[in-house]
Image (cartoon, rainbow, N blue to C red):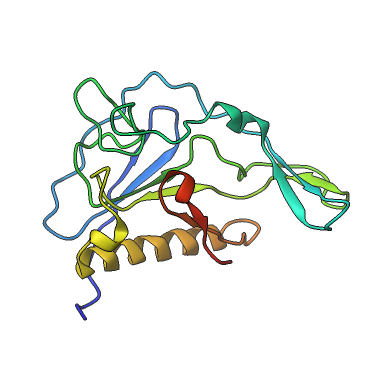
Length: 185
């Protein structure tokens, strides 16, 4: 088992004001590319509604209807590294791990409203963790040092989310397209 890797977190920002952080091992190139896409600021509103039949809370986020759905590399996957003429969510043309705020979040950190009813504000954070700049590479294809870097990035995200103003819970999804699965709580 390899040693726990040292890593650095160069921070950047996206054109619409969302946060972007790279998680790199020592020796990785400096992250200098700037996101120059003409993006409007993210305007997300959502709420939690209590399902009368099951008693479970369900997220309702109508603004997500315009999100990218099952992209391919050929149709312009927003999670691939940027290329000339094809800017994406990650301005660099290569990266190890990139973490950024979701452009179409189902929950938002600035949600406000009454917490005592069967409808509550959709408060929380939705971040995307990209573990490779290569579209067809799977997590299982990465070497063990790279997987440890991904784990370090995930720990960083969970710690940041849980230290937020309301001590949010953390959930994740992993997978590709329709094979995406929710990770445990």
